[in-house]
Amino acid sequence: MAPHAKRWLALAALCASYLQARSALLKRAEKAGARIGPKSLGLLAWKFLYRFSQLVGVDLASEGGEGLQHLDPSKRYLIVWHPHGFLAWSAMFILSRFAVLGHPHGSEWFAMVAPVLFRIPIISEALMLVNGRGVDKRVVESYLSKGKSIALQPGGMKEQMASRHDQEQAIFPANLGFIRMALKYGMDLLPVYIFNENQTFKRMEGSDAVTKWIYDKTGFGVPMLTGRFGAPMAGLMPIDTEIHVRWGEPVEVGPPVPDPSEEQVEELFCRYLDALRSIWTRHAQECLPPEVAAKGLKIIRLDAKPVPPHRMGAQAAGLQPVPTWAQTPATDPSPSRPRPLEPRSRL
Image (cartoon, rainbow, N blue to C red; front, side, top):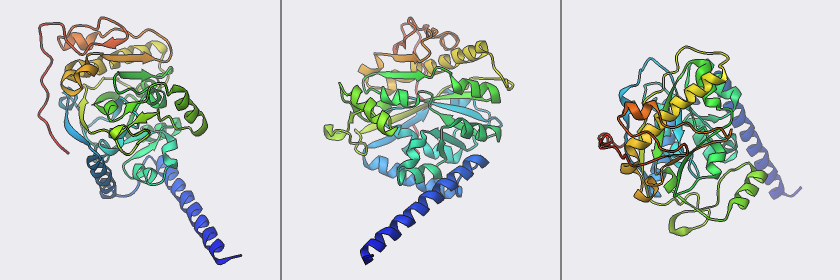
């Protein structure tokens, strides 16, 4: 065998050994419900991610929300973030620091992400260090059963594939698994909305068939998009964007319910929607482009059940209830004004 062929074989064997060791490390952490490496290493990985995000024009402009005033450090939370966006850019490049530090409730948390991301070199290593884990029922229950806080995005790839730069939307799966997990483990839900996540890229119209074909062939649900300068599929060249993070008020769940009924699931889901819509009503106008905020927040249930109107959350906030089941208006037709933004703060 030629010397250069031997070198290539040795390199291939080394890469295979590394991938096997990396997979074993991740599985061991998921089984133990633990982080990988010291916190300092996780923060170093985040710093690399965040500096890159700033370099390409996506930065955290502000963070706030009513939820920051109502958190109990002694509790664990099931954090639910919206929207997914084209690439979940902010969740990885900005909010990952929150996971490592345990912000905002004082206890580190683990973000459940698409397992397919752990196939991508560099991205997979960064995710592992900043508490990213595969969104699998076995993994989720492993962390919850050990008393850990987790974060997830309920719309997942379905929402990612439907992402638009000109319409905010929240898609919920048919089984409402995040609601069932919250009930099973007695974990309060903590909604967070990442305003302008959908504006980091633009959707290419008429590309739905191509997006579906890519998903069917590869498992990646990335829609056809354009980035800076209108470049197609420029995943590492986002449009200059200021991100605004707003934490909603926690939704109390109560004692664990090992086998929740459909009525209990639906009741908690309705209260969760109230909390999510309250974030939107209070902050959309200040945080989004006016033309996007004016279209409202579109709620989609994949189980085809009707979306309940905004009830307790709107009344408690002194805001006008939502007039339709499909969307939450960005404007408040009542004389009262939404609450002002909290003081701006940077990471």
